[in-house]
Image (tube, rainbow, N blue to C red; front, side, top):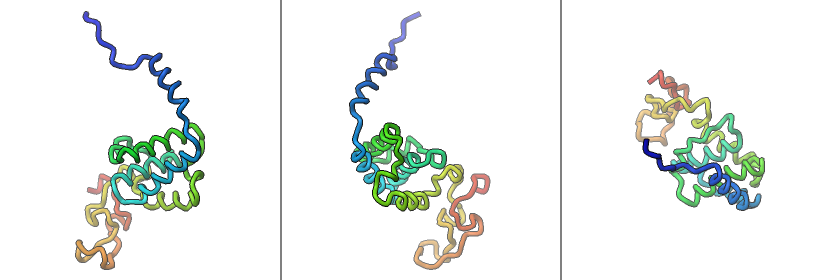
Length: 165
């Protein structure tokens, strides 16, 4: 039987990489800067905002918020590096991200509300097909400025279980 070429890192190689990385610990100020960068991104309703919110909220409360690692592909290199800094420093410092920025509790409460559809209780749901995930029914579907009425199908949440397609 031919010998297979090793493609995986050996334990020794990996241990050497870990030892190198431990030399690269960042300061609490760099952690705070990375959190601030991601907060700015997470406050936007974009795919990058979604990824940034998942990193921050999962670092804040991992049992309530989960990070979909593939969503990190939505971040540009600068914001991806900020995400990696937040993840690494959450581990290294045991410090929650809201505590390293000014008004962190208020800011994270806002992110919690803005991105509630990413909460673990909501992850398995889909956008309500009756209201297109808006939670409101409008007489004119193209006019969000008019006053809508709460969607009866989703009770205004904008989300329904997959079984209610």
